[in-house]
Length: 207
Image (cartoon, rainbow, N blue to C red; front, side):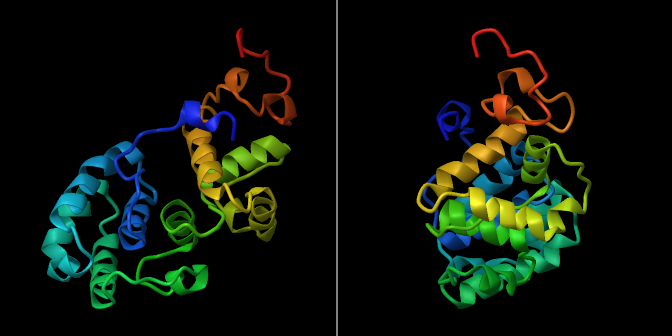
């Protein structure tokens, strides 16, 4: 939490957004680098200013919007999600299970949308967060670890009751900038002295 402000990444969606638009951007961010999503989000933000304007979204428009992000199988689901949001005028439930009943919305998108854009406490479980958690605890991990019950329970325990938005952004930014998949920069990590994986790495000068 103390490190978070210095590591904060200023992406265009990291501002006050309605929950429906926050959910759309979190769906766009799944399995996609944030830098890739930025142009698509700017287009979404300017072309669809209201939830009801999403009724004009069709597969051609969705392909132009999110096609460059890859994973073309998301396009029909994205269109369905936009139509449901438009039908309900952007009024979405602030509930993990209810959000996951929407087309194309999984646990990560639901948790990220609620905690980062919906002013509702929720944990974020994705491969990047799992990497930080498992390295911190010194336990092995792979692509399926994020589905383990203990991971969600650990994050439930760690995520604060009130400052959950700042905590989740700090965790995501730490994974992106410091606890990288390859060549993690343990020497500058704010968690190094407590981390089972990084504690034997020399601390960077001035840390």
